[in-house]
Structures are given as C-alpha cells and as structure tokens.
Amino acid sequence: MAERELDGKKVVVIGGTKGIGYATAEMALAWGADVVVASRSAENVANAGEALAASAGRPVTAEQLDGMDRAATADFLARHAPFDHLALPGSEVIRMSMEDLDEGKARAYFDSKFWGPFWAAYQARTHIRRGGSITFYSGVANRRPIEGYTMGGAVDGAIDAMTRSLAWEFHEAGIRVNCVSPGIIDTGIGQAIRTAEEWAAWERYNSERQPVRRLGHPEECARAGLYLMTNGFVTGEILAVDGGVESIP
Image (cartoon, rainbow, N blue to C red):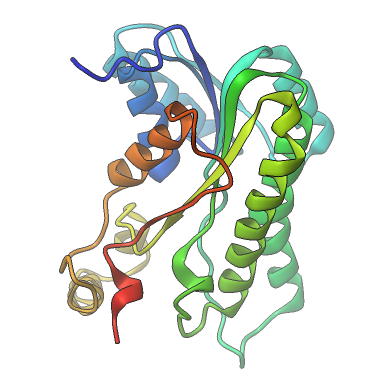
C-alpha cells in the first residue's frame, strides 16, 4: 500500500465515531497512524472502537467525550498528548426555516459546531508536536446559500474565518490549521430521517444540481482531510469537497 504517510504519527478525532469523522479515523489507521476517537454517545463510541480495531487489526482508543465540556476536553487532550494531528468534524446538520427559527436551538448549534471545535483547537495547541496540524470542517452553505440553512451557513462562514486566523496565530508553534468544506455528503443520516421515497427524491434532486451528478461520500472528505494533515506546505486552506456545486449558474 502506497499510502503510509502517517506511520509513527498520532491522530485524534473528536467526533470520530460516525460519518466523516469515522471515515477519517479509518483512513488514518490505514495510512499507518495511531488513532484516538471520541464522541458524546457511549453507544457510538463502543461500536466505532470495535469496528475500527477490527478493520485495522490493532487496538484503537475510543472514549466518550462531550465536546462542549471544556474541562473534560482539556483533560482528554492532555491525557493523549503529545499527538500530531487533531481532526474536528463537528456536529450534525440542522435546518430551520425562518418561520420556525428557535433562538435556543440556533445558539446550541453554533455552540456545538463552532465553539466546541474552537476551544478544542485552542486547548490542543500546547499538545501538538511541531509539524502537526488541526483540521476543521465547515460546509458549502456559506458560499452557496441553502434554503432553511441560514444558521448553518453563518456557522460555516465563521469556521472558515477562524481557520485562516488560527493558521497565523499558531504558526510559531509549528502547527498548521486547515478546513475541509463538504458539500452534500451521504453520511446515512438522510435515510434515517426520511422515508425511502422521500430519500430517493431528495437524492435525485441534489444529484442533478451538481456537475458530478451524485452525492459525496464520507471517504472522499476523509481523503481531503488526510491530504491537509500530510502536506506540510498547506495551511490556512479551505478545501472544498462539494461535487462542483458552487459552479451551478
């Protein structure tokens, strides 16, 4: 296997038990890294830890962690220090129309997708080895507005701006900071919240709206994330993995 660029490296993935985070952890293992994953759900942690270890053929550390708990996150990062790369896939997508906009839910979403990763990155900066990296995950909505997703677009824009700023703030510590910006990715969540007929119609509609004529896969976002980890000449980058959706007239 040609891709062993993470041999001898340690990768921490907060939010690494499903979707893009799980794919990132699995690919990092395949590329030779020692991997630590964490998420809020104890069930997801147990299932992911077992599946990742079986896939890799070696132990994988999986822990329950509430990313919104700054003290718990600081302790988690300190216990696994030093490490080389931190990936922060973020929270699940929520959609709220203007008529149904709820301040509490909106603030909770911003707290989860922006403040959780921000403080994790801030606390990790003293634990990452020189030459290491932090990878955030935003989304296409701040560049290509999506109806019912104004809050998501606002948070994605904030993450992109944070990425560029922290790339400069952390450069003296030898830490690169980048961001993967996914388009519409088939993580399995869509099928869970829709009927089979609704999912088929939704998938067809969104596939037809972009040049590649299909939805993205978590593994494609994971590969983008590992590129950002392993290319030492890339920092402050917002890497779109969106099927060309931005090019739609």
